[in-house]
Image (cartoon, rainbow, N blue to C red; front, side, top):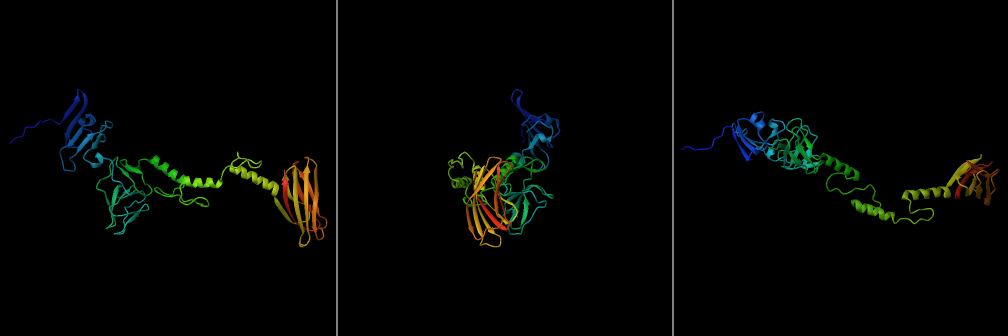
Length: 359
């Protein structure tokens, strides 16, 4: 019995409309490359290799007209040619140059993650063997390469580890991060906010005086704001329009100018105990004879100046015991604007002073 079929030499061409949307069905004993028919075939054409073993018998589809070579054709019988997506992997190993092995019956740790039986790992830096996806066989402790060989355009999603939620793609020679810019940006954001790793990681604050450990940034900032309290009311020294540090500096300057404590020991020659940039100042001074704590003397000094001449007075004094010999308390002016409190004494004395006010 014979069968009658339509025969065509080399292939057939189908035209949807005259000279428009042409597609060809071609056959040959080798894959499409530099054959004239392969070069001239329009995009979408199919090329059937009708000779060889089950491995070499393939169907190719033309996807480009760029290189006029085999690169313009895609192997439609290769699963990776049909779809570039690979099954997700647990982690990516970018360090090992030799395929690692584990202890039979136990998980193996890759990139800080325990890998158990049948879980998948992408290795990208192997010096021996393919850089491809490998499946861990826990009973033997050995990684077995995926039956799908890496191909151009393969893409895989990473579940855990350093590259959690990142996509890796194969570019014919190496696995690269598909969304590198996004990955870099996420890493920058994690570093900026102090997040230690990808995934569900709660904040670990270095100080928890007012902030609860593990609370969200919104909660933490709210706690700090509550602790700071409402804005201050201007009172002549503190201004509501100032920043916090500006008001603290104002208070600090006020304390320095109007509350400074100074001291000096074993004073004999003229010694400046305190200096203040002011037009008027007031001090309380306590003087003790060095080596004899029973001889104590206190004075209240007021001083002012006009930029050239200083006027001062010790308008109050207290004395316990015999006064030191040759004790003198003087106020001098330097630079036309700085009042200096000076003490000298023939008898060695220890001096303490507190600036009560200055302006």
